[in-house]
Length: 80
Image 1 (cartoon, rainbow, N blue to C red):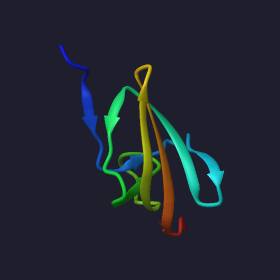
Image 2: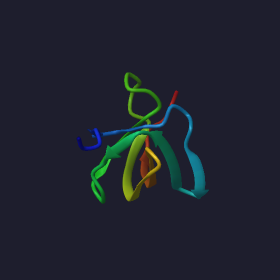
Image 3: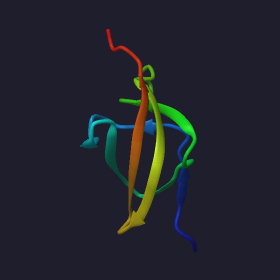
């Protein structure tokens, strides 16, 4: 049986993102997940919250039943 893969069409951070550079972030998620790369997608704090911005994913790493993505924020929606 193959590994279950989840296809994600947005980045849901749950506040766990780590800043690497000014607008570049690292986010680690449980399980193996596929993300579109080099395409602008929505960033949200939770699945149900409003979009907090738009990002482009630069790198996806799958190992030890975890997925780590590196993404660059390209626009930010105001949170007020």
